Length: 326
Image (tube, rainbow, N blue to C red):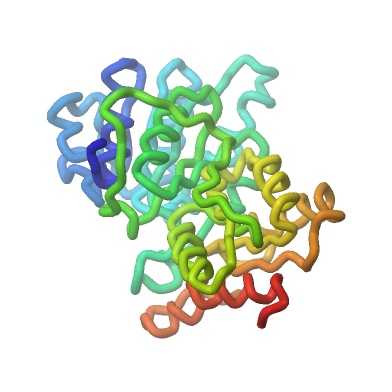
């Protein structure tokens, strides 16, 4: 199977869907003439023209609203935020228009729109450009929230998101656009709301999603050297969450560690912790541990960034804690 970059997988998903369906268009800052801020949309303007690959001003509230209106009138927009930090400017359109329109119109209007772009830390970008909003959007009824961790999942999930009749928040990572992975030539879809067991194990379950999954996978490999068998689950979507896969794994391993880049308060890890202790409490042999970023804005200095973010060392420590080996 061929290997392509994460950005190429996203581009293929959008391009294939736009060839299939003339109602789909891409709109956002620098997506056309500049080929995308991270070259995700490279070459798409040449193929589809300026009516379907549309550069916008720096006005997220405005072009998000244009996208919502277009979706209500039969089109299927893909709205790219240069970073989800900038989506805060447009959040009224996302939360109060896109997410609620089906309910408020009594089913007369659905909003088949994808809001996509990078989320989370991307190096030395400091506090305003390094935030994780997965749990913010996942908290809102009417939205689906997808956070892929590799090129294969990115393509299959983005195609499913574009075809979905509900608004989808599709969150990527600037630090993953160059990641390579195996992606088949033939068409495939990955259903929204289905987790993936990336690694089987018997001693502890590690749950994660997005780029921080790489931390979980490295930690699991290191733990194996010490005779600790860790099962790693990639949620892939955080609304809806595939609780069943997590619960079944915990019933097998009897221990759970959740690794998530976001701040700890009201995080996805908090929700999973609640659900597992409610539906698998009798199977737990230790309290659930979670590894989040520290409860502070992300600084600029790289040494401080490493102190705040989840890492392999913190994950291994959490696993040993639930195994009573620390």
